[in-house]
Image (cartoon, rainbow, N blue to C red; front, side, top):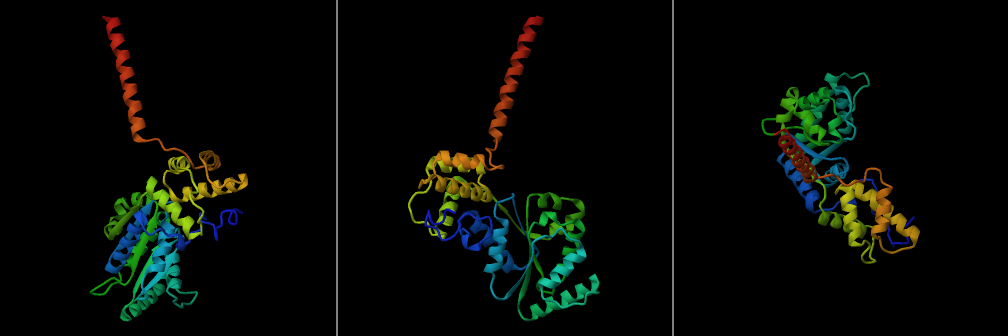
Length: 301
C-alpha cells in the first residue's frame, strides 16, 4: 500500500518473524550470544522468557538459523500437547521412521538410538520449544526424562525453552523442582528503552530500503514509546498504521498527530502507570487521612 510512496522494497514492520530484520545489538544481541554460548556448553535446559511481543519467536528463529553445521536442530511451536505427542513430534523432527502402532516406549528407544548416532558423528541435537508456558506439567516431566539421555561426557539432547513470564511461575511449583534445577542458563528479554526503540525502527527501515531522511518527528517517537511501552510487536503495529495514515494524507513525515491517530486505533496501546504514581497517590491519601484525624482529635478535645 505505502511501499512505493516511501520507496520501500518490503514491509518493514510486518508481524511475521523475519530473521533478516533481527537487530544484532542491545538486548537482542545479548540474548543471542547467551544462547550461542549455552548451546556450545551443551548442558541442561536453557530458558528465555519475556512478555508477549518482546521478540521471543524471532530470537528462536534466529538461533535455529545461526547454529553451526555440526548441530542438529528441531522445533516445536505449540507445546500444549500430551507427553506421547511430544515424543511423536520429536521423532518426526529427527526424521525417525516408525510404525503408526508404535507406543511411547518404542518411540523413546528409537529417539535414543538416533541421538546416539548423531553423537557418534560428533553432532549435537537441540530442541527449541516456543510458547513453553503452555506445556502441561506431565509433558514437562516427560521432556525432563528425555534429557536424561547422556553419555559420560555430555547430554544427547539439549532443550531451549522460549516462554512468557508464566513459565517462571509454573517452574516455581514444588513438583517441578527437578525440572527447575536442570535449567542451567536463563535470559529475560526486556522491553526497549527509548534509544533502543529508535535503533530498532531505524534498522528495520534500512533493511526495507528506506533512504529518504528523517521519517519521524521526535515528539511522535516519544509518544510511540510511551504507548507501546517498548514492546517490539506493539511498535510494529503502531508504526505500520502510522505509515498507512501518512501515505493516506500524502505527507512525508510522521508527526505527533499522525502517531496519535495510529495509537488511538491500537487496542493494546496505553501508557502504563508507574509505581511512582501509585506511591504518590498513597502518600497523598495518607496526608489527607492524617489531616482528618488531627481535626477530629481537636474537635473531641
